Image (cartoon, rainbow, N blue to C red; front, top):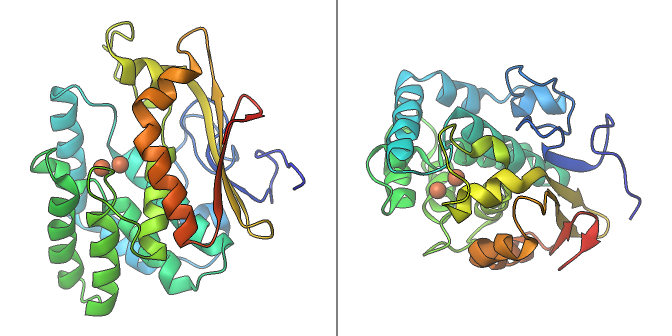
Length: 265
Ligand SMILES: [Fe+2]
Ligand SMILES: [Fe+2]
């Protein structure tokens, strides 16, 4: 496959971040600006359901609170940045692989809501997220069959019990597990003390590249090995990477990983 600079407009890849600042969308969004939403990043039609979900005051209140509660428990960032990013990547994975607009839209919504259940508890937050998503989508009069797609994707995103049961679910898994990045580390973290903080701190760039022709999904990582050895990444994320491989298979693709330009999977 021809390698294209992710920052170049029209690049086939889907960016988690290419600038080392947590900004998604292939590096086309300048640092410090509001992260691009799927419709902004793709230049395609608006996504009314995602807009309605995001505009609901309960969504914003719960995501903000969930992030605060997770910070109190010592977890990395799970706020609006992560929600937007996972929604964005899910949408683009499905779009690039030729799924219809409604499926991509449901992927965007599922990605945005997947962690909202952390407002209740970290334990089984996938299930709690699904229940909260159900209330919200019912209120927005989303057809039951579409709600079902979102619930299954949200409820199956955690590696402890999740399975990629559908293309929407697979896209959310890949998007969520790809988001390892230094911008997720809390300000007061002591990276020497916590392997998750250390590994996240070491990841300077993380880019999920979709190649529909080769049927591959490649997670391209740039890791500062002065901060954390590559082995530490796999020490804590092996289960996630296996989950990504299965999710890619659900999408009819192979899953690959490169670290600092070298294929490791
Ligand atoms: Fe989660
Ligand atoms: Fe997540």
